[in-house]
Image 1 (spheres, rainbow, N blue to C red):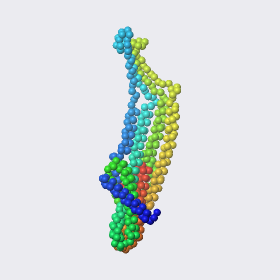
Image 2: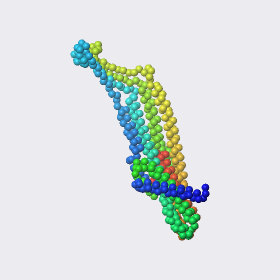
Image 3: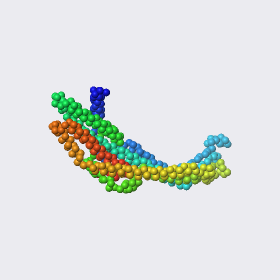
Image 4: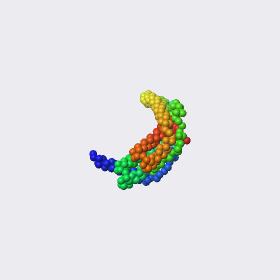
Amino acid sequence: MSSKDARIAMFCRILLCCVLLLTIKSSVQAQDTLHITLQDAEKQFLEKNLQLLAEKYNVSIAQAEIIQAKLYNNPNLTLSGNLYNPDRKKFFDVSNQYGQYEVGIQQLISLAGKRNKQVQLARTDASMAENAFFDLLRTLRFTLRSNFYQAYYLQNSMKAYEEQISSLAKMDATYKDLQQKGLVTLKDAVRLRSLLYSLRADRTSMQNQLNDLQSEIQLLLQNNHAWFVLDMPEDAITGIPEIRQTSLQSLVDSAYANRQDLQLAQNNLRYNQQNYNLQKAMAVPDLTLGANFDKRGSFVDNATFLNVGIDLPFFNRNQVNIKAARYSMDQTKLLVQQQTQAVENEVQTAYAKAINTDKMLETVDPEFRGQFEQLLQAITDNFLKKNISLLELTDFYDSYKENMLQLNQLQNARMQAIETLNFAVGKTLFNNK
């Protein structure tokens, strides 16, 4: 490829980036802009998230099943009457003098505590539904907070780019006039413009990442008609206590007490144990009690009978269901052990990452950002006064861009590590006040 073709290809790529940037800006302007803090976002999430609201119905359904399990079996009433009396040639003859009818009532009585065991199962199932709901809440809340911090620091990085782009755009316009007058070389003008296009392309890439995060936040908050500008107090990072001040074992113990997925596994084991007891109880036949009245179809008129019935467990003693329930119970014991180890491992890993990010940020001077921004303005002014060369200017701009990006990435990494630790523990222990 010739140098001319390479320049044309580069120009086309730059033009495409500019078009994409304009398209994104126009789509953003079509939406309302809403400033929102993390606390406000969490409030809207709890009130409007459809997935969370739908999961809450499972809790209500499971609680209704408890009431159903407490209900007794209905009695059974039977009526039998004469269809046709050939002696009197009369249909439906159930009269007291000549007719015939029978009345019977039966009640099934559950033995071996089956009803109470079914109620215990229903209560445990309701607890599992609550565990599933709160675990979903933990997961979605972590997604919201993680996306919020990531989007916030992307916005900060884009602001740094905007400052550079604004300064370079002014210098580019100036250099274009100077180059037309022959006061600067084409090489310097093109190099300055190339840096400007490069920054705009990087900013467009960041905007695309931010759009993806905004889309997820909109879905979590059920608001597709607002473009969120994320606000965070100045002490959002400095107000969070150091992770190393809390011992690892205390965090593990807190996770054992608060992790809803672990409690779900434990309740699942309890459910299988209760089901095993129920299946053993099902081997005991239920008793049927009843009474019958026969008008004149028995050995005497107006005969009354007491009925007692029970299945004889010769063949089916529910032995297969008992064995299956025992296997399920043994299997769930292993799953609880596995889940317990997974929780401990997640806390240990998140704890180590959080401490590492804390140590990393301790090496950064809190005044570094402000000093670098002041230096950027000073460098720009000195370049316009021709006190420094174009090469020095572009080198400083590259350094400024990389350092601002790294600083925002470090701060985001710490917040992500803290949120991951909160997620692993199952409770927001580390948060800015």
